[in-house]
Image (tube, rainbow over the protein chains, first blue to last red):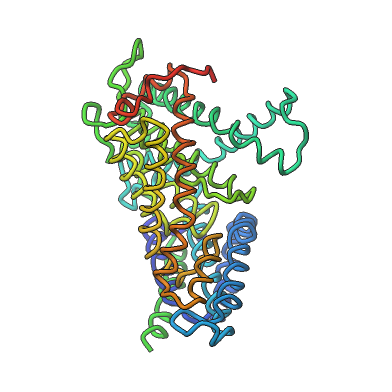
Length: 239
Length: 220
């Protein structure tokens, strides 16, 4: 029901991103984040992914920014250092919220796509031919690499090459991980290229990208929210 | 757009006994895997809180193996996708990745990765380039302090009265050369460890001038 067309999906994300860049009020960003973005992420079952991303990526960054802008510099950009710690803290909060919002928007735009629609959406965005294959391949190969890295570490455990599972020991596995991983990357790439060539998969993938039309309600809903968000922020920015 | 068979840089036209394989297919298959490698290593370093970034090993290795255009694609796409999956900071530094690929290609064409000493000089130079390209981004997007390890140095420099851009650039110069030097050394070490059967598939003009095809295979 809430499935927008690829064009509307891209346009709504773009408008929302512009709005977020122009936002100067941390409270407003926080409100929209909690009242609009989070419910949308929940409805599309992306909240867990987003929460993990925020906890691992945005939160440590936010703490760092708070300490640096609020304590070490003690001012917002453009002000003499130590003159306004509260402004520094506000700036750090705004930066962190913007980053969380932008990440949420991108996740909403791309990760909510069913795998089968990825090629069609990319084609509708004008990413065709080799670029389309590259982007689709890049977005889907990540779990494969994680699996391979896990297998290498497990194999080292199984052979008794790793004494224990402490953090320090895990860190020491990185050099041993790199060479097999690069070899695997190149070897798999060669095998895959041969398979694609033999079965003419690239040409077939291009042909299998029919245009997609979203629902009118979905298009209007996402475009309306994004346009409103951008308009509010443009007005406040120009004021 | 990836170039077709005869124009593509970085790939052997027909390796010994290999099936007739359009090089475009090989590039399209290897680049996404290079992106995953770039992201995987960078993320691991970030998660286990290593004092270095290690976020350009894939870019450097792929530039040496596949050429400049493929290196730029690997670097830029990995940082754009990394912004979606790993850290919101990454996409802003896509330009730095492109600069890294261009620098590596230019230096490698002149044999900059031929000996360890040359790699050390190239790594330090790469750090300076990365610091120069990253500084305006950090100032424009984050106001000078982006929460990374180098930001502590930046913050102290700003607090001591230096200009923001100057502080960002100086802190970048303190951190980046060490990081990029290690990454260059690691990338060359990785390529030298590749089995011959794999590396002979890659006949880029960047491998020959750096003696990266003349090594012994460790049989990984």
